[in-house]
Length: 124
Image (cartoon, rainbow, N blue to C red):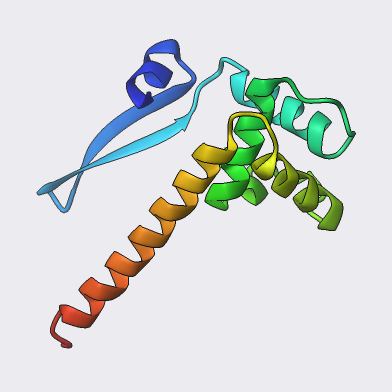
């Protein structure tokens, strides 16, 4: 998916050496306007109450389930009704409920594995 986004120009990828040893890759938004379009569609659904199409509902549900919804755009008022609407989309019949559940389980697995590794590593 990432390579497709870079290939379409939605994201720009650049690499550089850090400390002369490690390669660091940076991604930044391309000039296609696609992100602004997606933010506008999600905003229209969650803030303005527009009926979502399945793709927008799935996107909002996945962003909400992953915890990234509030980082989508700083000018969107991320208050109770907006978050409640996103949570409703997570549980809705948009085909995203299974994906949202999978994202939640994956996030829980990442956190528990991180805690396990930090408990095993020697303290220095």
